[in-house]
Structures are given as structure tokens and as C-alpha cells.
Amino acid sequence: MNIKPLLLGATIVAALSAPVLGDSHDTIRMATSFKIRSMDPVKQGFWMQEFGQGELLMKFQPDGSITPWLAESLTLADDTTWVIKLRNNITFQNGKAMDVPAVLAAIAYHRELNSGTKSVVPSEVEFTQTGPWEITVKTGVPVPELPSILAHESHLMIIDVEAVKAANGDFEKLEGAGIHTGPFKLVSLDDQKMVAERYEGYWQGKPVMDGVELQFVSDENARILAVKNGEIDIALYPPVAAKPVFDVTPGVNLDLGAVSAGGFTGFMNIEKSPLEDIKVRKALMKSINYQEIADTVFSGTKAEATGLYNPSFSWALKNYKFDPDEASALLDEAGWTKNGDYREKDGKTLSMTLLIYPQQPDLKPLSSALQGYLKAAGIDSKIVSVDSITETAKNDLVEWDFALSSTGTATVGAVGSFLTRYIKTGGDRNYGYSNKQMDTLIDQLSATVEQKKRDELLGKIQAILVEEDPYAFVLTLHKERVLVGDNWTDYEPGVAWNHIKWNTQPNQ
Image (cartoon, rainbow, N blue to C red):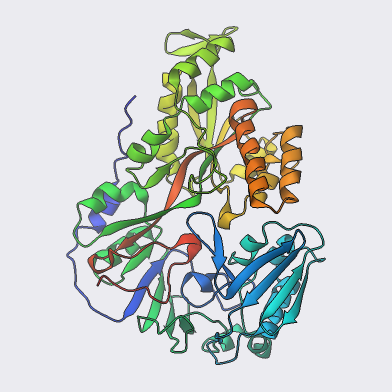
């Protein structure tokens, strides 16, 4: 079948009809749809690694690996012991040394006050200074995803705790206090924008640009127009459906980056007909043209889903297959026979209800494409938009068969959260799936540190979800994306939300 690209509404086209205004400057000017509300290190601190202020001990890479950042190395001594060696040439932006006591204080601060940190770092874990620049981590039980924890912006951002405590909860006092280690020091923050200046003593070298001005612009058309008019250099979160217009508009460029660790994921309601039948579930997966969704429906702005994970990850299997003939045979075996356009069984038409939610507008073209694939397979369908996929699917607030959601299956390289919450029996976002073999594999994975063994376990998990007991699968993978002006077309969209680095600069 042929899926046509999504046509755009008039609002984006009209926004791009204004003339282009040239500009030259030494400040990185960026716009985001989200607002940074304060310098509270717990509730808002994660933003700081995104825009060049804060840094973490470890760094997530596009291939799924975790590499040292503020740490010089992270070594696994045994299944329950890790050794962190810090770089010895780093200072906070206020000049204080980022030494072992300072890092331990930051870790303790987050463990005491940050609920996200508490959820991933058990209370039994001990961080202890064991050398001038060395921290030993005793976990008690295996914590195989410790590198990912140290690389996640919401868990253990390294801050000058002494300065934070001196502010005594008045977070405005932290503006200009230099509590981070990054290349740009935040000097002012209000409802409209954040301003940061170059930190001359930055450990990787002198930052290329003088500073950063981040504007908070919730309206996507306003962000697009600001790039068009030369008012900002980089706009985050552009609508991918607008790519055909961006491609023919001077001064506006959709810049695509690495494939991310998540995408649009589908969850099947296996507790009711027709998807209680494994053959129908397999047929559904084989009815979908994953490459066409990525290349045509989304004009190449998303990557083809070849399996549950980004194919560059060492543990990823490429086991998804578009095979309409096999899908048809499976439906025949399940007793659903063709009668005109649709299949029937015992006088009942084979039909499915697809759930989407309005916060993700890209689900509209995706669900429309799915309707086409289902019809080709002889399956009738309708689309229902709900406020919350989790609440609706978990509590069966409406009749549903297939729910679509933007979900990270390996956020910052960590697979445990998705498997535990969505796949394991009783998970808080499990919509009725229960497989004893799967539960055992997930439990084994949570206690396995050696990567080779983890890859083997993950291979078995992926095989079950395709070949034996399908339930959740990825339909397309996201790509990092931004909208940039002509002077910034060499900009590489940030991986793991790291949008601004010390060497971020316009085209040379």
C-alpha cells in the first residue's frame, strides 16, 4: 500500500511567509517550549545539563554506551563494587574545587531530597572516599545500571552543595553563584528567558561562545518564526510533520541527529478478543510497514523500528518484519476469514480501537497510517483520543485494543525501568500482560552485571515479545531534532537532552 506524507495546516505555512532577517552575534540563542522555573537543584536542576551549566559523572552516547564525563573512569571491581576516579582539574564556576568531598556532598544531597534519586539508588548503597580522587561504591546487591544512573540528568547532578545550603531555599540567590561545573554560568532567570555567560575556567577549554540566551516560547509557530526572522539560532521540539515546508523555506532548516533510545510504542490489550489470541497479535505486528512509516509518513524524520531497541545498541535484535502474506495466513489460522473488505468470525467483524493522546500530535498521522495497514489486513479500526493512555488503559476507562505512546525503552541506556514498569507482571504501567518466563528473565537481568550475559538475557526477552507472546512493540524510533537558521546547519542535536556543549558554535 502507499501512504502519503501528512499535509500541513495553514498556520505553519503562514508563519513562514515573513522575510528572513540576517544577524551575527557571539551568543547561542535558543528557544524551548518548556520553562525553567527556578534554580532549585532537586525540582528544576535537571535542566542545567541540557543548556551548558550542569554536568554529570558519566555521559550517555548515541550507541547506548556510557562514558566518563566529570569522572575520569568508572570501574566494576566485582558484582557489588564500583570504583569512580574523578578528574583532578575541575572546579565549580565559583572557583571551588570539585574534589571527592564535594562530589560526595552532592550525592548525599540528592539521596536525601530527590525522590527520583531515591527510586534508583537503594538506601543500602554506600559511596565512600578511598583515595585522593577516588570513590568506592558498595551496592550490597548488584546494581548493573549504575553507569546509567550516574548519566541521568534527574538523579545525580554534581553541584556545590555548600553554596546551595547557604541560599537556604531562596533559589534566586543561586543565580550567579556558580554552583555547577559546565561551560556556561547562569547569571539570570525569569519567566521569559535564562541568560548564562562563558565560564573562563572551564576544564575542557575556553568555551567558544560568549554565552547562552534561552527563551521560553511555548507556541511552536512562534519558535519557527523566530528562527525564520533570525531572532534565535536553534528552536527545540519542531513539529516533524512540517518537514516538507521547512525543506522549501529559506532560512529555516530541520536538523536531524542521532536515533534516540525511545519511540512510539504500541501496547496490546491481551485480556480481550481479538488480541487475546497470540496469532492475531503476531499478525498485527507483521501487518505494519515500519520502513514506510519512518520514510514516508514522517518524511525521514524518524527512524525505522527494526526491534524493541535502537539497532546501534549492542543488545538490540532486528526481529521486526513486515510480511502481509504471513499476517494473512495467521489470521486465517485464527479463524478470521475474509468477507469483503474485512474479516469475520462467528458473524463478528474483526475490529480494533486505537488509543492516542493529544499531547503527541505525531500520533495522528501514525494512527491514520495504522488504520490503512489494518484495513489491508482485513481489520476494521477506529481512533479514540484520551487525556491519559496510562489511566485509560490501566483502568479500562474505554473499550480499547491497541494503545500508542511515546516511550523510552532504554532511556540513557537503562532498560530496567521500561521492562519492570511496562512488561513485568504487576508493573505500574503494565496493561494486563503476564508471562512467567519473562518475569524470570527480567529478575535475572536486574541482578546481572556482566554485559555479555545481559545481552543474552535481553535477546531472550526480545524474542518472546515477537515470536512467543507479543504484547508491546516499537512502531518507529525518534530522531533528535531541532530547527536552525542557515548559520547553524552544522549543529548536532543533543543526545540525552544535552543541547549545549563547550564547543557549540555556528558554522565555520
